[in-house]
Image (cartoon, rainbow over all chains, first blue to last red):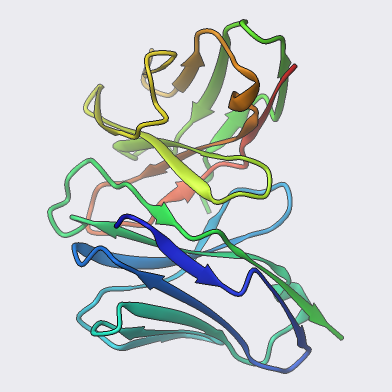
Length: 117
Length: 114
């Protein structure tokens, strides 16, 4: 029940295209859904995050779409650039609103995105 | 932007040896974490630490693991007797604990157990 399933495992997109990565979860207690970007040799860096009280959040070229009833969320990267080539992880956590010390992020397995010129 | 600093970047050890991985969280942060990533696998939660005690730990974090905040700046992960399967990238992370729930990750320590 704690799993977050992510697809696809790898993705190749032409420069200027739209990259779409999907995630699904089972635990209805999850109330925070971040996406992390990881470059080789670096730690994950927060890209964008959403709470379940909204269905979409947009920051620049990055958009999260959230479907609470389907327990799915996705990352859309518009106008994909070669510099976006990285591994993207979706994640989920619960009890964020309580501000409790525990902040156990459950990660998906990651999607390796390659944007080709 | 402030950074979480981890040392060393690479650590090679023999099976059965003790290792200590070191982290300097962002200075005004109150919550500290260790995650690990086995090569090609997802990032996995190990432990969270707040107010000088463990607030949550995963099944991975067994008696061979311990964490400590020995002073006001460092946060360490100790593995008492390393096993081959402990080989992974270990990430330290911290967050401020205010309304911003953003988690900052360090660049990681690649642990290789031979």
